Length: 145
Image (cartoon, rainbow, N blue to C red):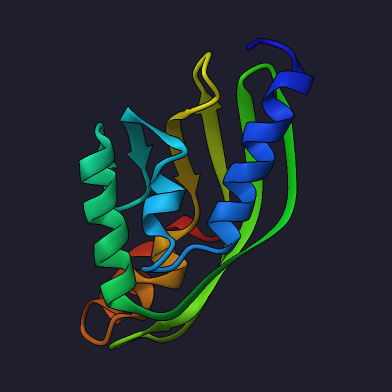
């Protein structure tokens, strides 16, 4: 699987599964991933589907009304980039509305072998925590113009 046409179907299936993601759809979502999937976001870095499942379960526990909405995507070769918005509600922080990108790579069988998320955890999570948030914002001030 090397050309864009061959990745179109697995890419579409993955995007649809991401937008439908919930506790009842987790197994269907993970069935699109290889056993040795690498997953990375600002808080986690895992290398197996079982560890990815633990991250997803934790996310579902922490975020109520979780929803991914994909606004754009593009792919070439075995790579897919997804532009998304993550919404929901988290204890201590309140409403979440997080824009981000995911870089996704597929193996020769059309399974996801790598999913790397890019989003600003400081702005959307740590900077909003009750005690640590003001400290984080103060520490970041010297970086701004």
